[in-house]
Amino acid sequence: MSDRSPVLVWFRRDLRLADHPALTAAAASGRPVIPVFLHDQEVEAPGAALRFRLGLSVAALARDLSALGSRLILRRGDALPGLRALVAETGAGAVFWTRAYDPGAKARDTDVKAALRGEGLEAQSFPGHVLFEPWTVATGTGGFYRVYTPYWRAVRDREVPAPTPAPTRLPAPDHWPASEALHDWRMEAAMDRGAPVVAAHAVVGEAAARARLERFMARGVGPYAEARDRPAEDGTSMLSENLALGEIGPRTVWHAGQEALRQGKAGAETFLKEIVWREFAWHLVHHTPHITTRNWKPDWDAFPWNTDETPEVTAWKRGRTGIPFVDAAMRQMYVTGRMHNRGRMIVASYLTKHLMTHWRIGLDWFADCLTDWDPASNAMGWQWAAGSGPDAAPYFRVFNPVSQLDKFDPSHAYPRAWIAEGQRHPAATALSWFDAIPRAWGLSPADPYPAPVVTPEAGRKRALEAYAARSG
Image (cartoon, rainbow, N blue to C red; front, side):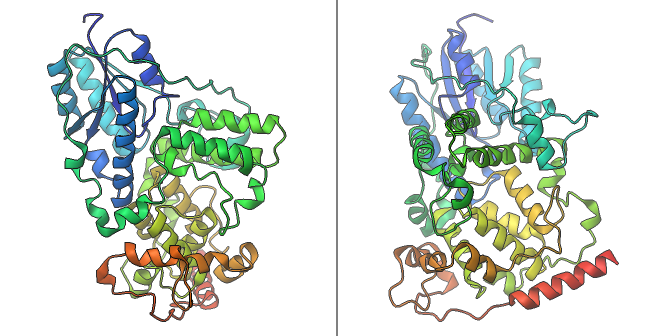
C-alpha cells in the first residue's frame, strides 16, 4: 500500500468535521482524504422523517467540506460493493469510519471490515458516537449495568477526551471519483406535503448545532432542572436532532456541560445526567440488542397488549384521542419532527396503559415521525414507559394525562399551541398541523374536538386489572 494512497472516510450518522476521530486520523495521515456518504440499507431503515432530515444534514456536510476545498462523494447501494467500487476507482488503501452499536449497523460493519481487510486494505473504526465504549463500563463483577443510577455513578467522574477541532484542510486526491446527486435520492419523498412544514423547524448542520449548544449554555442550562418538564416552554437544549445525526459530537456537549457545572450553573448536573441517559441506552443496545425489537424482560411476552390498528390507535397516531396533553404532543411531533420529553412519557403511557397497546406500535410510529429518532433512546424510552424494559416505570404507575398537564402547564398553553379545534383564533403552529397531515385523513380546523376515546379513569382501571391478572 502506497503512503500516498487515499483514505476513504465513510460518513454515516456522524455528519460533522469537529470531534470526529476518524476524520482527524485521516487528515493527520497526510494522505489524500475522500469523504464518502453511502445511501445503503441502514439509511433506508429509518422512517420518513429521519430520512428527510438526514438529507438536509448530508447537504450541510457537503457544503462544509466544500469550504475546505474538499468534496462529499455520494453513492447509493449496499455498503461493501459501494466501498469496493470506490477503492477500485481511487486506489484508496484505507477506509475509516465512526463505530456504530445498533444491531443492523454492527452486522454491516463487521462484514465490511472483515471483507476489506481480507483484500489487503486498512479498515478501521473509531469512537465518536458515544462518550464511553459500551464494553469499557462494567460492574464490579464484570457484567453490564441494568439500572441507570449505578451506571451514572460509574461514569460521571470518568475522564472524557477533549473534542478535536475540525481540520483546516483535507488533502485532495489527484482525481475525484464521480458522485451521485443528492436531489436524485429524493430523501423527502415519503414526507409528502409535510416536508416543508417540518423543514421550517429543523436546525441543520454543525455550525447551527454548535450555536444551539452555546445559546443553551448561556441562558438555558441554569433553569434546566425545572424548565425541562414544562412542555409549553423552550426549556431543553433541543440538541437531540443534532446528536441523532452526529452534527455535534457527544464529547463537545459533555465538556460544555462540565464547564457549566464548574461555573455553578444550577441545572448543569441534571443536563449531564441526560447525556448519560443516552449513553446508558447505547450501553444496553450493545449488550442486549433485542431491546430494539422485543420485550427486554421476557416475562412480559404473555402480557395481553393489543397489537392491531384499532380505531383508538388510529386516533392516538392522529392526535385525536380527546386528551389534550396527548393530542398536543402527537401534533407537535408531526409538525416539528420532535416532541417534548414530558409529552413522550405521557403519550407512551397512554398508548401502552390506557389503550393497552403494545409498545412496538408506538416505537414504529415514532420511528416514522421523529427527526431526532435514535434507535437506542427510542427503544429504551418506550420499554421504560411500558414497564417491560430495564429500569422501567412500574406498570402500575400510570401517568394521568389530565393531572400531568395541570401540574406542568397549568395555563394549558401547550394544547392551545398545537390544537386548533375549538379555538376562535388558533395559533399558527396548530394550523400548520393541517398543512402537514395527509389529505386522506380528511381533517379540518373547523372540526369539533373529539371526546376521549378512553378516559384516564377507565384506562387506568383496565390497565391495573390486566396487570393484576398477570401478576396473580
